[in-house]
Length: 386
Image (cartoon, rainbow, N blue to C red; front, side, top):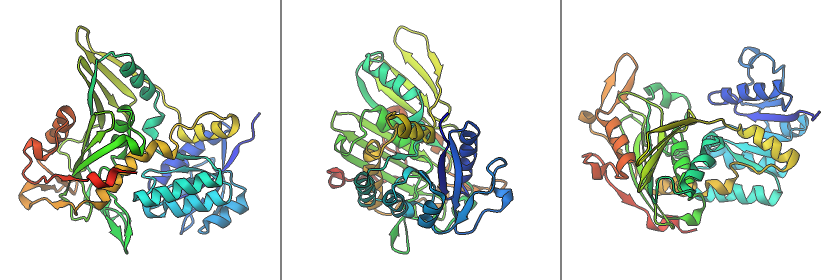
């Protein structure tokens, strides 16, 4: 029987709770063992899920990796800290599961990816949707010509976040903090999966697959970054990818990606691993798929060479989008008449935005092209060359 791999989790609060629960699940299967938690303030016993024991805790990440003998580090910390923590682990020979977005800029991403490669450690980027078995299934349908020639890929995310969401941490909703890039916007963080998944299904995951990017960034909330935005990516293969997202939806729903073909379409609700195939001459066909956990895949990679599902190279095109958003003009502040506050939920709603998001994914049009009066397109032809 294999010995459980010792894991240190950096960042165990907020989204880190999900990682604690997942580590507990894998620990129960004998795959990993939680050896340490890195937090500025130690977790209380009540904050640690039952069954994980009393892992060592420290605010010193490097020292904790050494004292625990960790073989894997899961990094779920503020975006600007990702690169330095990843390189700390890499220098100590510790493999990585690095939360998305992997970095706040192309330069920081390159510094991280190159440093990890030089150190010879494995790195998995936490785009869980790319672990879905639906992704290779959809790629197979595309390759087989089931929906004809691919015209493009759309993505839609209509979510809601209360005003308190932007008060959860000093970096929340910021483009920069103390002179350091953060880029915590709708497309780059909460709905980043929509962007990465659309790029993956379009077969455009590497930096040189991207030939042009246009962004339209806006916010209804009192934040610096964007909460209502869309992006168009043009690929070397001649395809267009348009992803639209909002955190100010009227009626929040699960995000999805649509592959548009000349003889049909494939819709993928990536949080549900659910796929709907619609094509000429056939009734609609719906399928649900399993999913490979990315931490488990990383362990399998270390044990028997199983290919990593989301190595840094697979996220290069996503990082080109992050870079385009980073260098874009500051997001447009929506006029007061364009949104209203839901008092009971303390969240801001943009009337009509749900339809705009869906229409963008359906027609591969930007908000401005759909008639949104507050949308201003910005092209970034120079930011996409490697």
